[in-house]
Length: 144
Length: 118
Image (cartoon, rainbow over all chains, first blue to last red; front, side, top):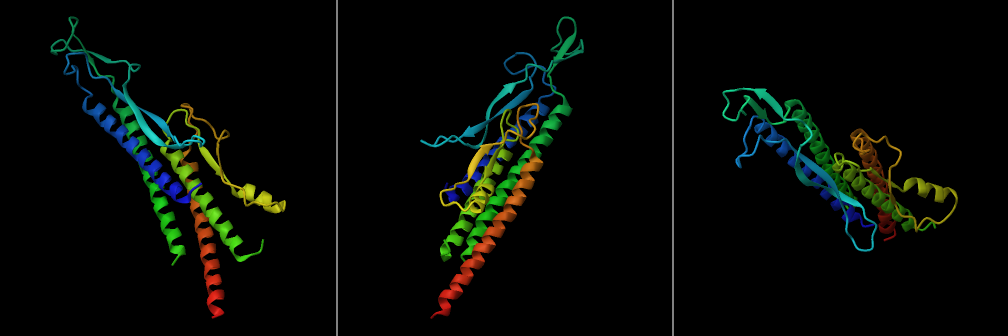
């Protein structure tokens, strides 16, 4: 066990958490801005809500037990479970023959919940990163 | 066992364990939204105390990272509790501060003992 690497590993773990949460915030912003998009640029149906998938990053040191060293966004996947919203709007250019327009499966409440969760998680990671700096500074003061 | 450096060495080992614990708690915080992640804990002080009470050697004792199987698991299989991690971090930082202060004052006394003889 190496102290220096522990401090910097911790700092890196916190940084990876901040980066992953920021990516989630970006995806929430993308979802909210596309909440009314009924036709994608490639001509396919409405925009689908995107979700981030997080996974733990494990250390790959040879001859050592695998330990988590951080987190990353594994992928951004479309939400195929939440149903799309169908609205009767016969005059809409994307209405089907029965006059139904299909809107994205985005609900402002769940997006805002995700946003708040991600912001809180981001802050807690930032606080953890701060504490490594303070510990390193304290250790340096021993020699004074 | 009573030579002047053994206490210093023990304090620096306690500081190392504390650093490792801080890192482990930071990893728990980083993984708070990963489904299925199980929080890690570092144990050292209790094992050290046991060895000292039993009068056994503890120079080979190293901090141990283990998986917490007792904390309540949320619906996504993740058992990280942000309140728990934050309070454990605070406690750990206070312990680190205490070890550092003790080490610093010991070193100060030893310095004084050395310079006094000049």
